[in-house]
Image 1 (cartoon, helix red, strand yellow):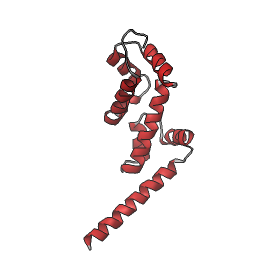
Image 2: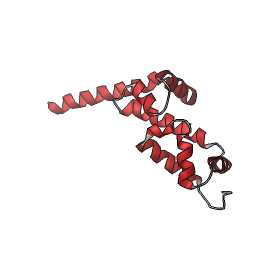
Image 3: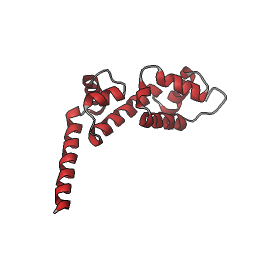
Image 4: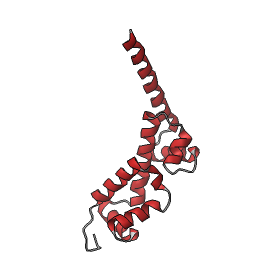
Length: 132
């Protein structure tokens, strides 16, 4: 990277994914940029430019993809309601979360809720069967 210090895009991705897993509330506008800039000790614009040159897409595009992946995971595998998930991942509302999922995946949020319901029903059936 042009800062004279090599920072791999893989290390940037790893930090973003780990942050999203452990502290999803950090993904509010401007917050992640500050964290990345401080962590790697270079201006965010330089980090983003070098990341884009290496990966072919920007850090913000990567973050958007990660946020949607995390949202889908939470919808399917957690018991949290949609407003909680939206808030946790920095979306202004459940509607914006749903619109973003639709734009990025081509699937409505109800698709993922359906998977959640199937999982819950299957778990319930397994529990009943195990008791017999």
